[in-house]
Image (cartoon, rainbow, N blue to C red; front, side):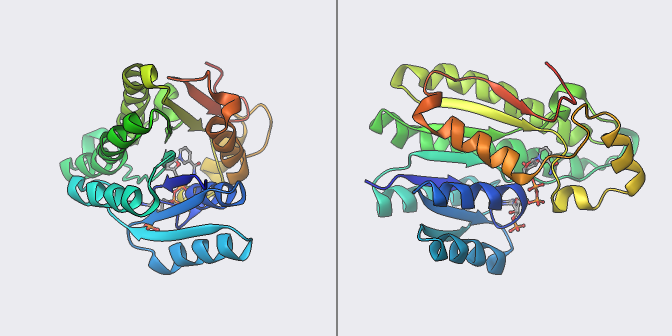
Length: 245
Ligand code: NDP
């Protein structure tokens, strides 16, 4: 039977790469997005053109009832939900002294509350199935801290803690919950950084190059596979040695 995977925020960037990789692994992929309908549809098209199966689904992950409806749609249509990758994320950077309350709230809402909304709603069907894998996309900065990103770092550190707690709760039913903490991965989110910041970052990466989307999608396909059945509650760092736990 075809397994079903939901990848939040997979119209672009890392999420897109994860969706394509899972499509080629034989999953039916639900390509979630918030605003980029055309981009989400072209990810679906790419998966289908490669012989896979996918659909797009618009849903703002920070809205609990919309997430609930999305999960209900997936389980109702496909009978099960086998894998969830909580990838949707936003930044609203600024030094704490100048950070607007709305910018703090927005980043926590999408990144952390959005992850909770999805996990909370997939837990029930996964517990019923007695199987499932949940992978949350965290960040290296959750471990390092980062000036100008207090909201983002707090959201990602929250995701790491959420991962460990939910992993303990769902482990008795064979469901694994892990996080992946990417380092500096080339994407639209990092394209906006100045050359000066990028050069500074490169100097801190022992492997001496930025990561690619496939470095993250390869880790996702491993954690999603039965080769990773004994791994749960972990944050896997993929960062070229920039942070060594
Ligand atoms: P991008 O900005 O390139 O893509 C973000 C994705 O999230 C888009 O598909 C976007 O959809 C979606 N999204 C944004 N807001 C929402 C929302 N409210 N509801 C649903 N989907 C939403 O980001 P990246 O690919 O760079 O990052 C992906 C993840 O990896 C994030 O969680 C990020 O924090 C994390 N990460 C990235 C690193 C990097 O170096 N790039 C480093 C460490 C972590 P739409 O197109 O519709 O707006």
